[in-house]
Length: 325
Figure 1 (cartoon, rainbow, N blue to C red):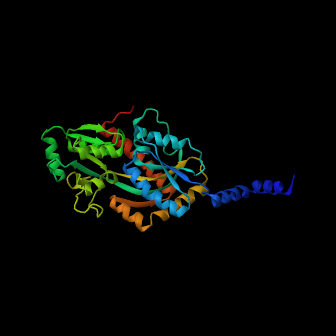
Figure 2 (figure 1 turned 60 degrees about the horizontal axis):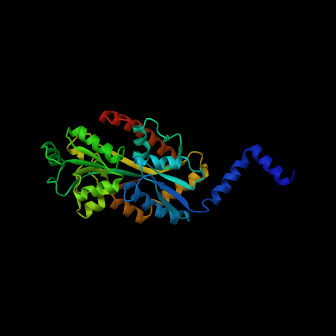
Figure 3 (figure 1 turned 135 degrees about the horizontal axis):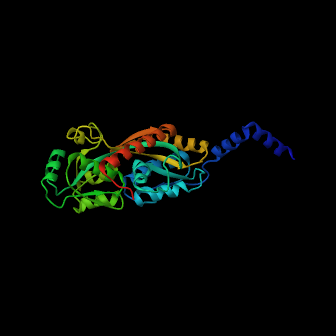
């Protein structure tokens, strides 16, 4: 046995060998581009925010962050692809409240578990939902909207980004609380669902702000309320739904996770990269434009957010009567 092998054996026996190897891996990481799976289609809120953060991460970490849209099944397809990826830090998944804690609850046999199959990197945002209506709808406030809904005029369709999406659950919750009637029309992503409002195919949606704000700013749709519990500088002049429906509070969140078993040193490097990226002035400006709050949490705190959302959304799904497939 040569001296190198003897030293390696001694290091392994002492537990220091793994530390040395991990340290070397962290120093070398990343040595090639990193793929970020977006479990939603282009122009969705998840796509928009991931690209804002990912572009800045490229500058921080020194390797290209490559976006890979894998929409479908309300995020389940992308989450399953990420689960099966090599846990080496070169595949990251944008983790959202909808894809990870709503969609699996609507499946009898979900192909992944949001906590057991992934290691958390960290949270980077909280996404509020905006109540938007087609321009043809003659309402400018939440009370006017509810009165219009109860008048029985047709069509009165609620667009969502798909069954099990954040906009679906938020809208279903709103319908239940207001006791209005509206036909739910699920689309294949946030982009198409918002486009249906612009075209007048649908009359309203309670949609994540990043999927709506460009259309709101361009006056292609009208924002009349939001889902935070109180007023926010992110949406000046727009009242919270809670001012009409006391206690109404439904927001989403967004972060990154990696396949279970990814080395901690790699996770730490990704986490510090995200945290630094979120401090960039251009990221702060872009997130504010999308009416999105920057909230940076580490792996342990983000894991708790996911766990708590699983409980909250399971309760909400049962309350609004959504069925698993």
